[in-house]
Image (cartoon, rainbow, N blue to C red; front, side, top):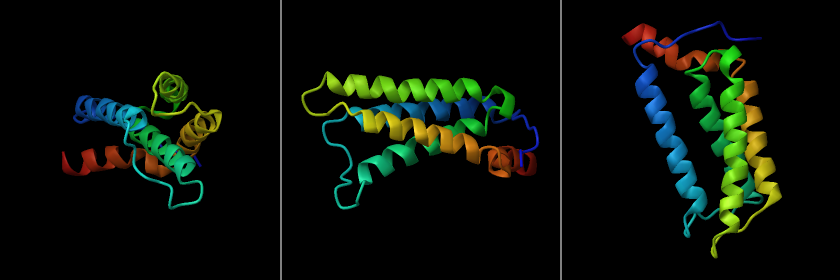
Length: 130
């Protein structure tokens, strides 16, 4: 089931700015020497990658209609690859193909979830309160 078309009007610019802020936070977390500890959970690192990228895409899915979502899909997959490459240039983080796969899978899962009415949540809030 595909979500109905929507278009943010009043919240679009601020939503984009916040989305780019979320991208910056994700890059920071991925490149910091002291990342969050996920060692207590089996595959915690991969779950964190998958979840982070899925949620990040879902934010952008609130802004872009379904037909325009391919650009953020590609951009976030490329971001996940670029971050892993950037990690290989540090002494404190490691390059992993499995992380690239988890990042990309997160984007794809987010894209699949965005085909549901969840992708219009921000629009519904804008319509109701603004």
